[in-house]
Length: 170
Image (tube, rainbow, N blue to C red; front, side, top):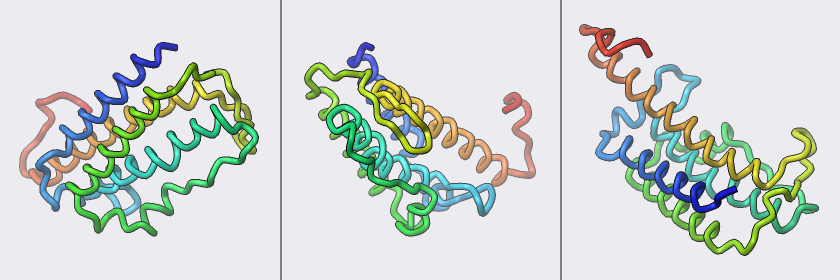
């Protein structure tokens, strides 16, 4: 596994997320296509919390403390309890970008990580450190796609007297 390439992708994904939300007004940042879906603001806060409390922490445990249970996470509950929807987008983005920079520093400082180290998850079974690293990048891509979808859905909803069909099918 080429760690430098993975780090490069994590860095590029952070820049992509920043570009996708930069300069967005509060109305669009908080807009949801449905009550049970997240807004862009909530996605950005989710990314910030996952950066620290999920991927970096769980990868550290899997590399260095395989017998120690992972700290629990509950992203849907966090969105409500931590009031993601009421936060400021600029501050939320800055928090994510700072956490990502810390993660990259941490990854670059790893000394000969064993990507085959295994954590035995009580529900998911065997998870290797390499699985977590690849999932970290994949998680970014899922939410980049989600932010793009939210941008398009907001545009279509706000300009409903016009059609975006000429652009192509989503």
